[in-house]
Length: 490
Ligand code: SF4
Ligand code: SF4
Image (tube, rainbow, N blue to C red):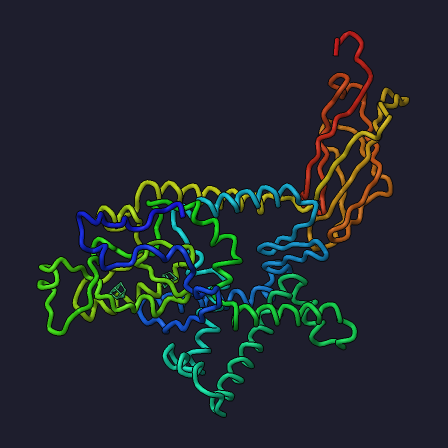
């Protein structure tokens, strides 16, 4: 970890070190025992304001996620990642492999955005918006609470013999998990092949769509495996963002942090013990109730400091706030804070650094938006035909032959006309109007004739504009080659 955890107290200066095990949490993960066997996490259901806010936000995200493939903008999907046909849609704009530059710049902006966002706001994404967390914590785990009860009941059920009730509960839970995994798999498939193709697979004879159905089954089993069994390990072992975020955050990053200055020395609360009496004994606000550990879906103890497994889900913040309410101490012993702020006992502030990073993020976002919105629907190149120079014609005219290549990057067919806007002259496209199918490329020959008086020298810039009906869809500026003008020196 690049970020330091709470400093270990000096044994010479403090008695705390004798009572807290600061040593071994980094040597093993919370979800495996000494032999490396999986330790199942029975996380208590969080209750509190953050859980309520996350629930509301998750409902919004889930609605967008499941409706996404069916939402159309200008007849195009909101989001489509059709790797098979190499067709992509983003906010209703269709992208093709020819948009390589948009992809390259977009990817660069996206990666820079991740770096800046993580440096400023830590793993806010993981806790609030990552589909894995949203589906795991707000859908699958809630169903588990609903069928099997809260963590103690789940633990008891897991350890009990196979009674008819246990068989019923486990069967029901896994049947619902499988059905939900099927739904999630279908949604993912709709983002890949498009909702129309998915509906066709579902409604048509299965024999006509064996490939699609195979992927449907594989995705279903994959999601079932992740949400029923693999769970938090996806974040710990698989997710690359979780692993490299430790190199992006520093002591000023906003994290879910335990205020060890205020919490230590931790000590259980004894009956009728007053806050003043605890303070007099050098005890902090942490009453060592371990409620923060009980709710943690990754099984860690946030009091050990910032850890890779922490997905910043805020469950421990809610749990600890409830404890603080009960013992009448201020909320926020575990809170959103920077490690620097905790160290210096400062509240979380909007620092110039956060403002700066937010501005950079906004600029990156605007850059991305500009890139998407200013991208033309038609890609055009018009180059002089290889091996040709110019042809001198009667009536003091000169002609050039060009090779024209057009790519239709939109999702609709287009009829394209070319007009020579500057200088005055004549432009002829072989075959007349060009018909461009969606996503297709056409080539044609173009002849441009200019009067000698229009030539600016050996090379004259042309302005050729492309129209689809009355709509201007592109401009190209090729050079026109002419004879050297006598006496001009050009
Ligand atoms: S919930 Fe709060 S008081 Fe209880 S152990 Fe965790 S940090 Fe300490
Ligand atoms: S330590 Fe707290 S914020 Fe981190 S994963 Fe556990 S409960 Fe969530």
